[in-house]
Length: 197
Image (cartoon, rainbow, N blue to C red; front, side, top):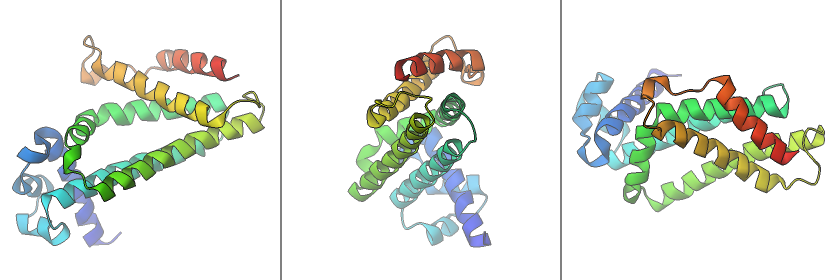
């Protein structure tokens, strides 16, 4: 990676922190520059506008997230191992960036149509990765062969997202002690698998 690429990643990582704290409208380029440890002018060498930086930050986050899901889909193991790994990864990622995901949802009017289309394509990539895990499990005989792969993939993603939301919004939990312990995750996985077998 070149120093120019490293500097851009530093700016993107700094923007995640600043946008998470202040939101799109209240965040200032100077705050991002300060967080990245560089001058405000340097930010504009990489990004034409705050909106451009915001959208590139979203791309950066989603590409990182999808890279992790692809790693999960390539794990050598059973369907249960892969789905448990996906659920653990999803909980860790979503809970660690929940404030940022909320800002992206709340600031959706700041996101261009082109970017919204790109985000849709990335969501489909996530779906495709989960569907490939389901398809592999059907071939191996771990899941019944009359199973609708599309419905199963949507069910897995939906279950995972709802599990994360429950953990995030449970009033009795602090952000630091969200349970991702194996017992809780195994209960979700066992229930899910019984419905798919």
